[in-house]
Amino acid sequence: MTPARDIEDRAARWLIRSEDPEWSSADQGELEAWLEESMAHKAAYWRLEHGWREADRIGSLGRRADRGTGGRQAVMARYWKPAAIAASLAAIIGIGALQFAPNQFEPAVVAVRYDTPVGGHRTIPLSDGSKIELNTGTVMRAAVSDSGRELWLDSGEAYFEVAHDANRPFVVHAGSKTVTVLGTKFSVRRDRDKVIVSVVEGRVRIDDATKSPAQLTGAGSATITGGDVAISRGQSTLLTARSEERVENALAWRDGMLTFDQATLAEAATEFNRYNRKQIVITDPEAASIRIGGTFQASNVDAFVRLLRDAYGLRVTNEATGVKISN
Image (cartoon, rainbow, N blue to C red; front, side, top):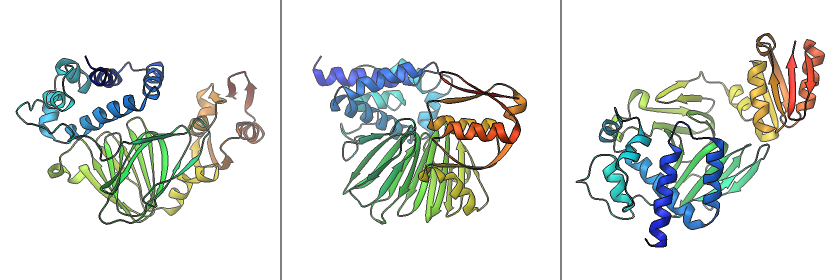
């Protein structure tokens, strides 16, 4: 087996493993370590991942192949063999008679990976004049060239200021959702299968990436404008009433702040835990259900819990790994 074929073989096996329901943070760490070993590893894995996503879009043939077989991971495990990537994809979705060019699924340029640690904040200028801000614990890939602008939000949250270019739509892939714009300001947050899109100005279109273009009607596609927020989970998408204030609150992280409006203490603790290694643990349901509002510094857990103690008389216990809160 040639070195290139061996890398493709290992990349495919990693992709199969990543679809397993028992995939753990330790597994993710091993995958990231393998990807960091060389650019060839990254290119092979991203090319296969991108190819599978494109194969998903073929539509009903792919979904029929999935039904009754345990999902994508089971289909891949059943049909995948160490052969050419395009041929493997054709076999996976059950369309062996359809031929693909060897590089049909490859991005126009190699995607560049960007990330931030817990509590991190990073601004990235793109070659097309667009600007991206990454929030805490975010992983994103970007492929920008003269022929297209395509990004993948693997996890976390990002704010986009997109330079207008009618000939090159700006496309963000986030799980099962695809966000397409020409020029606008918006943010995308991805928590596993939950995707939240908040628009500051302009218009964005949100499509279900599992559907073919002919099927993108009704719940499959939605267009939102400035002040709108779309919350998607799986194939369901909820559009909120127009509220510039809601969007501003969602983007308070750009100034290092968190804003809550009658959120439960449990919800607020979850948000703080995204930004800090010092974790907040609420030990009883009564304290977790307390409603709070206000603006707080995202990185200052100690100030937040002091306010909780002073305002609500809650018991605060500091430990090595975090802080426990109870009545």
